[in-house]
Image (tube, rainbow, N blue to C red):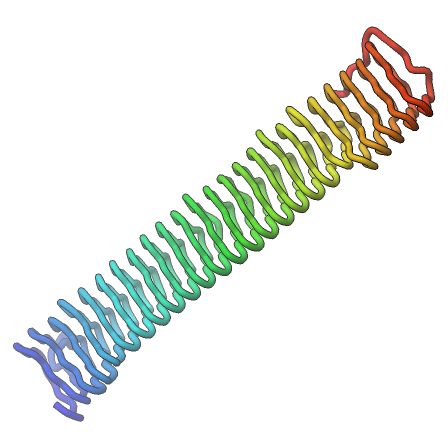
Length: 435
């Protein structure tokens, strides 16, 4: 048939058409082809089509109804448009496929673009350009060179996309690997995800690793095992394991973790609980920061309530209601309202401490200014200024100034030019520390 319209009901063998339109004269508006349907140039089926296989070359094939293919669809250098539902075992189309209804095919291979307005169900889906689904997509393996946009739920074992992935509904996948960006507008349940550029999700669970080259955002609570981000990270509260960020980490909510390693700044609006924090810049926590191991910060630490760790080492300033360490606190400036307590506390050169210091051993370096000290052993280097000292053993280097009282139980050693507001007093019992 060539450049004509033909009415058919059933073809016992193969059907060959070229540049033609086929209509059905059956009650169910369906043409049944027992063999293969072969199309050359542009062909239109103004009906439903059921066939063993569908082949096309060079042109555009349009099915104005449902397309049901028992075995395979193969269209070389052509396009396929289905106005209803489509079902086949295998599909291989050179350029473009559009399905107005649902698509069900175990294997899909499209060189250009695939657009499905309904649901997609497949075992293996490969598209060279773009893949769009207007509803849910349940595909075990997705491999797309360009972009993926799924309006409904996504359920997959493996998703690999060269450019951009967008999922509007719940995204469930064992593994996602995207070269460009990922946006999941609902919650996710993912094993692991690797994104070259930007990752944006609405919270959920990522069981193993999040690896992002650029920026990462989670707008709702997130459970995770590992986060590794090159740039900025924002999460709206969460719980998990290790967090490694090259730039900044911002959390709007409580955060529990194992370890945080950030090159820039950390800001947590809530309570923060974990093992270890290492930050090059600054740390800010609006409530409590509780660590079982170490806090190491190159710049400043500002805690709304209490900070507690095994060791605290801050290059700049610590501000908190209360600071406690099992072993030691080392910083330049220590500002507390209730005090700081550790086995060993050290204030750096020209540093400052506001609030009581409570320690077994205290070292105040040259020209630092502090308030009250409660300790077993206190050493003030040259030119320091202190308000009150209550300690067993006290050593004051030259040019130190004591504005208040000095009480000691064992020994007091002071060098030249030490100024006492009151005469130091040796006593059997020292006043108790604030806590």
